[in-house]
Amino acid sequence: QRSFLTQVAGRPLRLDNIRKSAATVDPLTDDASGGRFVLPKVPESRKPATRLKLSNTEIRRRGLHDLDPSVPFSEYEALHQLWSQYATDLIADAKSDTESATRLLGGDLHGAILTVESSKVPSLIGASGILLKETEQTFQVISRDNRLRILLKEPSVFAVQVGTRRFLLHGQHFLHRAAMRSKVKPKARGSVQMTTPK
Image (tube, rainbow, N blue to C red; front, side, top):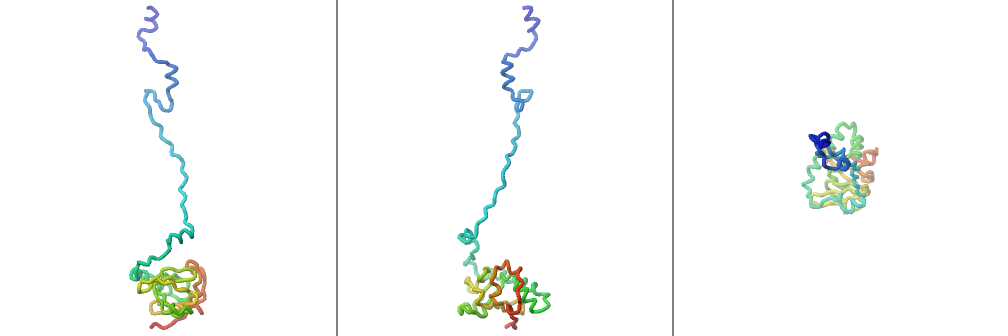
């Protein structure tokens, strides 16, 4: 009884297993009061998403560059107006007809009204329309009767009107892609003729 009074009485008693309790305490997630807190999650490193690029074959198969035949000529008239302003500004400060022609040959013709003045293919003569698409060998235009037509470059001469000036462009000098034309320095002589407007 004396030992109980001197060693135990008035002291708090811990009834659980001290060694077991100490072993179950996680110093990373348990605080001193017995509460628990959640450690913030460290975001996993993610590789940037790779962009898938369609091959030229797949682009052609899906028809992504094909023209829509349901769009009428009238919808492209605004495009022609923009091109007319562009072409006028392009040759505005040219010092000669030759320089004007050279600039026109190196410029963008999308939106121009092309008319086949002469051709080795009789069925193409007189064909006219707004240029919508250009390939290495052809001009693709939409005519006033809402028909999409393909005009071969090489055997044809095309008339283009810029303001009051009318140019005759020889298609054989356009036998490369439109994106490359600005990098090529064509010779205007033999490529373009000037005529009086009708």
